[in-house]
Image (tube, rainbow, N blue to C red; front, side):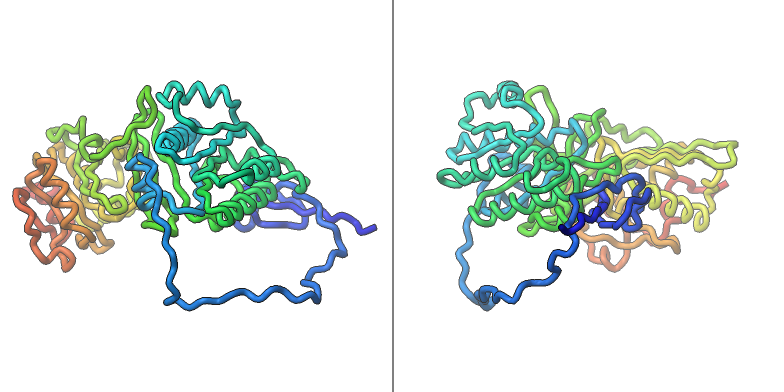
Length: 460
């Protein structure tokens, strides 16, 4: 009889090893390598001599029948998906525990079922009575949504194959499922890979939209093999801070729409409510007369969003001053501080610096450089940013202020919310003066031009 051979795989990235080791060489994670299902040695490695079936090939100009998208009725959810649900698509949604993943999907499936669509919600973490209690709290007790509590992949697929295929199915969560032909515990790399593959195959075969809820690691990445994110059509991350009521649904991969599109929600006692104008929400408590505060006109996906950037600069006698960042890249902050020191002579190297993006929003675009620099200089000089002013632009290592994309959209959103002035780049991308009325555009060439707004007599 052939001898079983042990294999080990990383639960974070899926890398396979012949023996256990403490650190994964592929992703660098520690204590993530676990024993996987045993493989029988001596098994044939290649395909047999039997010929396969020829695949039918078509040309690019072959007419196709494009099925319309299905709207869930939740506008921000549809926006993040690229305009609605595409039949036969597989969607992976991840987020921190308690952030509202199950609530959002229950609301979406309830809204779909109330519009006459056949939807199924299968939970592997809660009993059906618990899901019913949440639905009653959300005002969905009368929705004709079908509920199930099951963790066996075989039983789930058998249930879904009965009768007419449903419009949408939610699996909450993929880490709780197990396939009985795989000898490993639920949540391991093998189980997640096999269960994900079978459910995605079902979605393509039956034309059903399948939602897979995924747990996340301590780094905020979806747990399990990375191949799962490659297999699905759309990957959504549900972000937010438990200290704030705002929630951001961000698309990081979408085969049927744009990436980095966001939907904004507010967590209330009645569930997640849509936020149609997030700029007003993020600026609700903004005080333009406080030093260290600047309003950044950013772009999230296809929508302009105005958000407050707060900074606090305090002199420190410590050998290594503290740098604390919330909502922005700490490496980007270090670069901006270095440029302000080297090109403007502000002497921030001996200061504690605290930076915060208000509302729990996470900013990733380089256009926030100028707004961050404005908040830092304002806090250092104890001079507030001019009233009704927005700031955006990228700062280079040479101290130049570089142009950014979608200037027109940023200015239009700023003017709509009552801002009268914009500190922005005057480079080639912004060479054409916008025709937006009611907002004054002041172009900056170098970061020293920004410093002059707060230190008109020069830096002491």
